[in-house]
Image 1 (cartoon, rainbow, N blue to C red):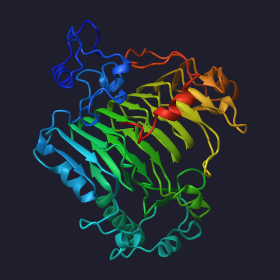
Image 2: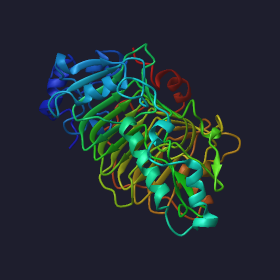
Image 3: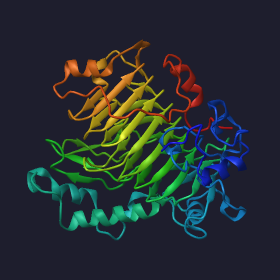
Image 4: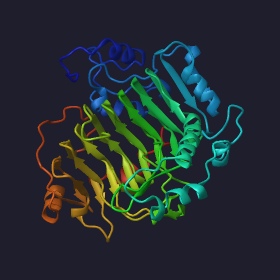
Length: 446
């Protein structure tokens, strides 16, 4: 059950709020929006998610590493320091990791930059040989690549994964130091089967796979599929991702070559929430210049997936903002700009699949001249999208009605649940384009 003004908060939540001096006189810990951590009320590194602020505030809430001792409160400037800090001490010990400046994930333990050629060295992989071996005119389209070159590709990819994949344990806050352009270039933070994690004030740039795999059976003409999301949640619970920026820049998809008639896609997701992850709040992030942006649910058989997205900005996004399956997803006060940007052309914004129950309140779409309101949603005919107060170019619009009038696979307009954790919900979407230009993304927190 979510906390209420008549129910005492769980111990972890009470301790965290008391430490930051934000418990009300009645000891209830229910904070007004003006006292949110991002309003500057507390030290950012020790901030906790406010009560009622989306699904991640449910139950014990999300406090991250707020209780870390001095030995587990560290500032890092390199990949090696980041990895060491995340592994230090006993499992589950609260920790605060302050990222200062940009960290390049494609580096060795001495800080030397690593290239795709470094990862491939000694594996026998060569792109030219791979293309020759699996050309559909030779290999066909009925089976996945196998054999020497595919094994070599997988080995090279595993080497890169060992470098760029960085695991975040339970009870951890990873936060960018204000004023330092903090972030991770080329890296992939993995929160797997971990609980109580905060990720804030970071820029995730160009998480790029050197070794995409060819799948001739993906779609009617095949596709190149890459690994590594900038942030991946797998079986994670109580996660708060706030005031971050996600971008493919400086390696935009327009620069990717084409092989076998398909784009050689080196980017996967920006922020994916899968494998029964649960109780997640994604707030005040900026997603720009990306194709497959956010999965909620890795398959139609996934489970849990209670996720809140609020006050996020999506610009230059092709699709999956989000693509949601199975769970209970709350979207409120987000801004979607469908204007083509840096070669990224909008396909759809929200995809409702596999029976997902989406409640969408007071979001704003800036619709470019080449797009229609009927193209903002997508689905497989089983999902629900209960919308209210959503605006398109300043006018309240029934997005489900627009979609259903133009598409054979209908989206349901009613859900079986109603949100109660809606901290900071603005009653109108009209001001979002102006306000989120100032308030969303990394580098805003002081």
